[in-house]
Length: 73
Image (cartoon, rainbow, N blue to C red; front, side, top):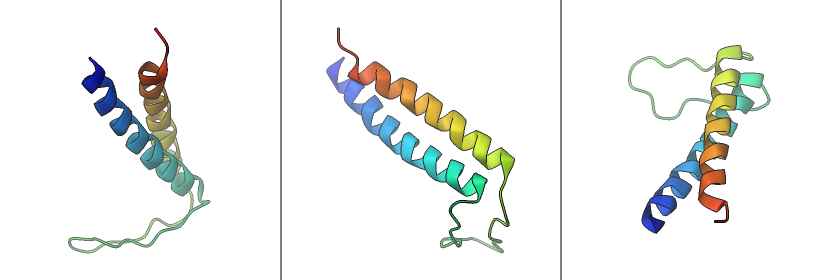
């Protein structure tokens, strides 16, 4: 069970960081140019409510996973 919490913890931290990036990009606070595109890539223009919501939900899920990992029993 300890190894499972380790894996969930690593995935949870990565999801928290990625969700935070998506949220910040969705709100327009961070703008990053595409770096690894296949085909024609366009940068996100302005805030996007869909990406902000996706990032927020991802951060909530990651927070729940990290709470499960670090809770005391």
